[in-house]
Amino acid sequence: MKKTGVLFLALLILAAPVFAQSNESEAAKIDKAYQCLESGFEEKTNANIALEEAVFGILALGSNQKLESVLSDRKTENCWPKPSCNLKNTAQGLLAYDFLGKDTASIEEYLLKRNGTSTDLDWFLLIDITNHVPSACTITYDGSKKNINIKEDMTLEGNPGSCLSITQSGFWLQISKTCLGKEYVISCDKDFITTLLYQKPNSGTIFVSSTTHSAPSSGTTSEKVNSLCFKSGNNCDYEGSLWSAMALKKLGHDTNAFVPYLAATAEDNAKYFPSSFLFILTGSDLYFDSLVDSQVSSQFWQAVGTPYNKFYDTALGILALQGKSAAESQNAKDYLLQVQTPQGCWNNNNLRDTAFILYSAWPEAVPFSGTSSNFSGTNSKPSCTLNSGYCGSSFACLENDGLVLSQYSCPAFGDVCCSVSVGEQPCSEKGGIICTSSQSCSGTTVLSSDSGVCCIGVCQALTASQNACELNGGSCYSSCNSLEDQTSDSCDSPSQVCCVPKSDSKSDSGSSIWLWIVLLVILIALVVLGIVFRHKLSLFFFKFRNRGKGGPAASGPKFTPPTSPRYYPRPSVRAPSQHGRAPRTQSRVDKEMEETLKKLREISS
Image (cartoon, rainbow, N blue to C red; front, side, top):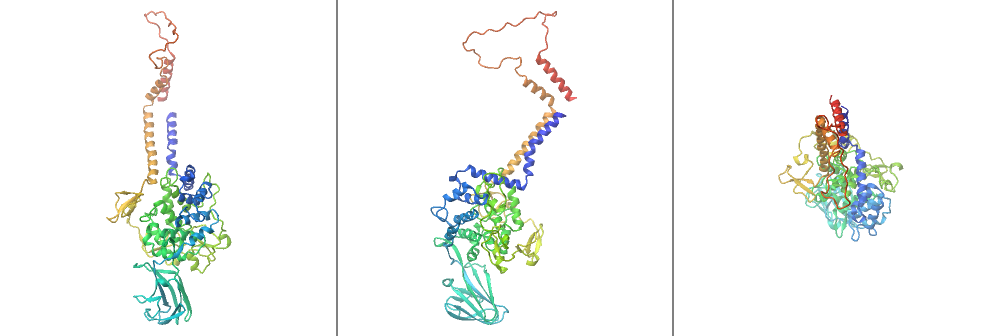
């Protein structure tokens, strides 16, 4: 029984890694990820570290001499990478330098000089009479007044001049592309409201400017189109504009003028996951709803046709929701912790994606050990909340008549410091209801101060609407890109195929667990066989241990090298017994055999 207990103790010791892996805490997994990231950079030479790896490595680990050296070596005077800079890399480098508290003035100036007017949109002027009654209005631009009338049905008539024309519907004034930079001063003889509308040509979607002006009768309002993008050469660079606007907003610049171009052309650039950037830039519920809708299987994000992968896109989605109590963000974090590689990284130990995930999902987690113990974590700006400010979205700040205090910083990536409180309202005050975990929202999802999903619409019971592809962690597209494999799982549309990332780390982790399970089963079988056949095994081990004692010499060459002659002692001869045979003395080997067999009988009894 004693030996059986020892065997089971050994079994438990060998099985411990399996149970430890399944019960590993979230903090331990995060520490493991930081260790994996640090080790990965330590193993690489400076020349083999990509620029984006260095940028996101700094954002995740803080001050790091090797990564800072890479960033410095790839930089020209004010942009990245040398010799020919681009907007995206320069914006990312700006974030890294700001995070380290370095001087960023020349980098900001480089980006701001590359803005230009976007002529890709159609713009409209809307004049609305508050009480919906007829009114006479004037529009002044280029030093002259133009008279128009607003009829009872709110349609327009009159001559608005060369820069404005009444649309076919009759409700708006279209602004000529040659007059986009002009200021229009409006006055009416009844209380009125004015704002700007914009759309991509031939698109059915109309966007309303975030700024609306109102005035009493005979008062005035002023409207001016301010639609900018960041240009590479003479053309707007959409992805470069996303990163540049986001980085400059993080540093306190007003980026509202870039939102119309980014919003109106988002549909054509869906592969860059624009809703994540636009939610950071505006804090609008419209883009929050888009973020929620685009999450795959309530686990991760992967934009249609993304040039990256689901880990990179998921990091973007979490970054947009940083500091917000959104269930989608927690779902994504839970998923990521399930698909770490055995080393603790993500996406086959991809350093860029691992660093981006840590920066977005766990930015305040101090590394467990290693070279990054001097983790910086914030830039040099004073804290907003410690200086009587309130952190929130710039959209909410302006809606509450607050001022953006750009000299202070907030911990969440998309937040700005505001002079007034910009806390989220309860769901009920937003006109919504809270859906339970077993329900989905049939309308629009908005952020609120309540826990759970705030639905502007109807909460409906969840149905098994996911297809086989999504249920198995895949995504349905018209075709898979070079970073994905096509599987046989079905999609809703017969024209779509199921795509999964190549060599998913989840399969690596799963394979590791199954290997431990197989080894554990084999070990249990061996232990059972050992207990059943313990007597035979004991005899076998005894013979094996005593092999060669008193027997022939170890095997070797069959010839003796020509050396000096050998002499062997003559064996002693005993006198024969009365039976004509020499008496047999018990050898040491026989005694050991007898003692062993005796012990085996005692154990089995």
